[in-house]
Amino acid sequence: KLFWQEWFPQIVYDVHQMGQNGARFVIPPFFDPPNPNIPPLILREVDLMGYKMAADLQANKFAGVATNTTFDTWWHGGFRSAPYFHNSIGILSEAASANLMSPVYITEEKMRQTRGARGLNSPLETSTSHPQAWQPKYWGAGDIAAMEMTASRSLLQMAAKFRRNYLQNFHELNRASSRTNANPNQPLAYVIFAGQGREEVVSRFIEILLAQGIEVYKMNRELKTSIPNTQAIHTEVPLNSFMVFTNQPQRNNVEALFGKQIYPNRVNERGEVDVPYDVAGWTLPLQMGVETYAVTQIVEYPHSARGLEQMTNINQVRRTLNLEANKEPFANLPNPLKTNPRIGLYRGFAASMDEGWTRLVFDQFQVPYRSISDADFRNGNLNYDAIILPSDGENQIVNGLKEENYPKEFTGGIGEQGVENLRKFVENGGKLICFDDGCELVIKRFNLPLKNALSGLKRSEFYCPGSILSLDVDNTNPLGKSFGKQTAAYFINSSAFEIGDTNKVKSIATYAKSNALLSGWLLGEKYLNGKTALAETDYGRGKIVLFAFRPQHRGQTFGTFPFIFNALEK
Image (cartoon, rainbow, N blue to C red; front, side, top):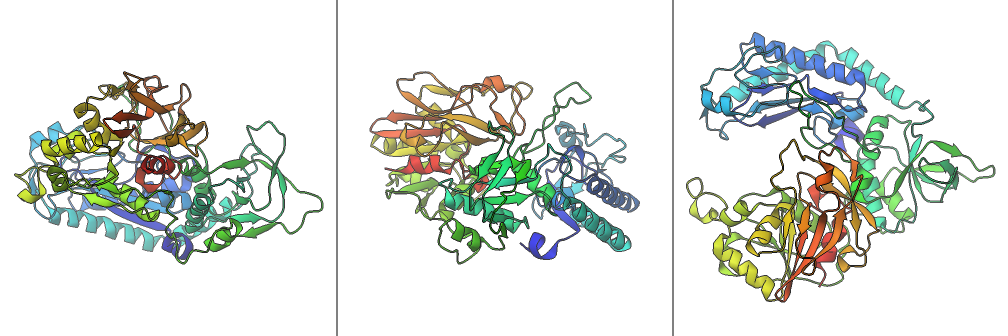
């Protein structure tokens, strides 16, 4: 809200740290590819700012400064990358880390063993974008602070000296975004149809748009529109639907959120496939399960009443959707569970981001749960109807933190006794729900007749770092309740199950048999086509539900949250 409704910054600087053994400092210009929704002028301004920072760092005798490496401008979602889609400059610096505030000694051997990054084969080599390699020695917080202070002053000097230029360019870019698109094949608007039946999710979807400064209108009259890939020449859009026009200052942001991402297929100088650094696809309607359509033509009714009403706050939207008013922004949503299961969520001392995202979803939906510690598992304190294992690997769950590095009470994981207690919990009638990597332990230790079909494949054979894939769903099964025959799921270095005994393990959802990629990038699609994405099996008197993907990924995938709630019902 501060950025995109009140402040509208022209420059955003995101100060980060990375691993210890690579380059000392990475700044713009960034590596390819750029996102096509970023204005070329923004890319040039980012480059110019980065080169000024690099020159000032070099003048102050800092070595190990690298540009044109590792990080790109494709992803929409980072603190420095989101500004690009708002016509603002985003700068990222990544400093090599110390051991928190303690210095570390970086040896030449450690640097030599570091895997090469895109654009920088080795931190020991020099190149145009890395003209002076850093010599191995001690590295600490003081070194990091000195480089970041120099870079920050450089940025502020540029902003002060060329203030008028940055303001003028920002103004002109926003004016250009507000003009109607002259290309007849490009969307004039995106429509969010009324009557989808998921009003709370539609409300949250529009609230996200409003929070980013995107203009949203309610339709107080019916319109006929041309929507690509539909059989009808003109589709009637009903009253109380919502329209997001592209001729607004947020045009690039609208296109980046509503449009499907197609990450380019590229080959590097070694003839290898150039894979994405990070997330390749994020189309918001697909993630949230909201039905939207691109509109290329609008036909006015000749005797229509008053037309469009701009939504300036979320409660206007909620009134239209016949929902109660929210008392605060992004208020909690109603608990969707019809029964009242006792839910336990594993929370070990080896910190898990996936566990945190799961807690966020439960908190937002007001679903009661308790955290289960390593000691609870070891002591058999598992008095629950359902237990969830987040996407943590077998070693992290079983062995946890190492005793030589941490106080004893925080180490050891659930241990072998915890695994045995978990097995007894299911055998005695409990339900175990596993997300992505959390399935590894259960498949192996419980001898389940299925395996991860992607396990052991080389990165050159299969790779999908963060994209949206199509699932075929058996919606006659209670786990598939409320879904259509197809849905979208988020896949980020996830799994695909191959079932060995279909009499014992049911496949509830499978990756599409062809054309599974909906948004992003996917190498080696044949390895997951038709494989199981969601499975269920009886185990003793209990049940095990296995997700090959993360249905609650980063708390954003509202479209697949119902799978979790269905699994939790008694």
